[in-house]
Image 1 (spheres, helix red, strand yellow):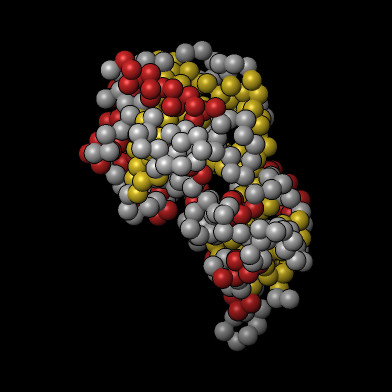
Image 2 (cartoon, rainbow, N blue to C red):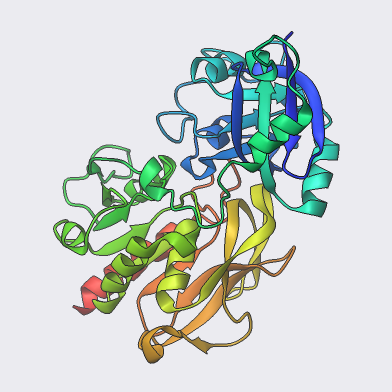
Length: 392
């Protein structure tokens, strides 16, 4: 088996075996604490330019199928596992994970101490990293490349802070996901119509809306307000996605046009950060982020604790307690509360505008894979739109 080396930006290295494609890759290294859902993780566009470490020790047991993809391709920059499955064993499996990684040229590494690696990242924070195997470990004369040379390559990679990446993962062409009736058949007259701006949208998100009788127009991240308006939306949705929300100038301005016209809005993950910025709050980079399907979040309006699916490295900087006035433009958007909070570290996990029909959460209520505790948020969005329509 081909040797592979993982090199961290701070100089720590791990030697293991090639997993997936042979070669080299660079990116921000992050860890995912989910015990399941590796296929959904790999195909989540939010992981663009990130090397993902799986903390679950055994990965690949159920192989890969064509139904659980969250997009049309694998987006991770690299993949790190401890014990890859020797064989895939599941009635839905059509190929092995190793074959899928290799076919899509995803460079990975296995047989390393992922527990030690995760502890290191928790203490030092996420950082740039590189995986090297095969010819990428050899110099022109066939000798093993020195570690300082590999480290220099890692440190030359672009950082995630300041990265504007939504346009790199978004759809190029608008498309429609039709509303569905209770029996799963197409619904001729939808309950509502939503313009969903694709910042790295997962396939399950418009599906969850469609299941509630909503027709969803999925628009590119470059969409203008005229493009949004052309769909005659009852509501606007901003999806999850990769990159630094501080660099998302176009998306913030687009959302402000939506808010100015009092169109109901719902955002998740990156969309939550964009709402925070549109309202005038800041965003910041977390030390190691939240990634997995087991994050406890409290809905402050009910006191209920939800176990939720997360994938984010940035967060909104808003006052945790009580109402605050949105800082943008002298407070023209009115009062806002932090509606949800992470119980592990008090990170803002949701925003609720009190004087606008707008709310958002930082986590993933579509939960593929993951718990379905937060599915009610889609119902809340539908209720917001129908109430607004009834009042018009």
